[in-house]
Length: 78
Image (cartoon, rainbow, N blue to C red; front, side, top):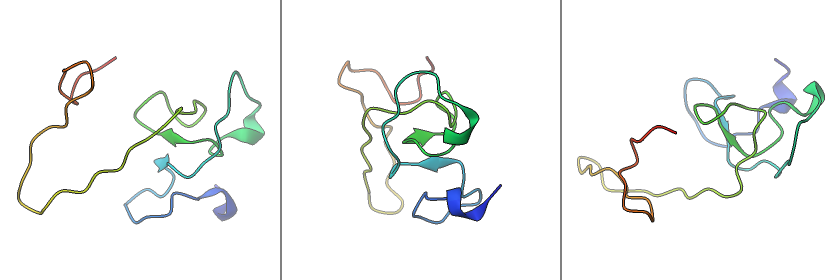
């Protein structure tokens, strides 16, 4: 992987596992657009752009799963 394509902007083990600073890309894209959109690797992969994202911070030691607008817990699978 070329380093200029890694734009996640925060620290984690795999710097290509997400990019919430990317472009919104719509439709099927050529390989050259891989990792350029706004994506979260576990949600459809790097070739699918998310329309929006929300980053939330909570105090250390306190955990409760976030709730989606439809009332379902965040650990659901599509």
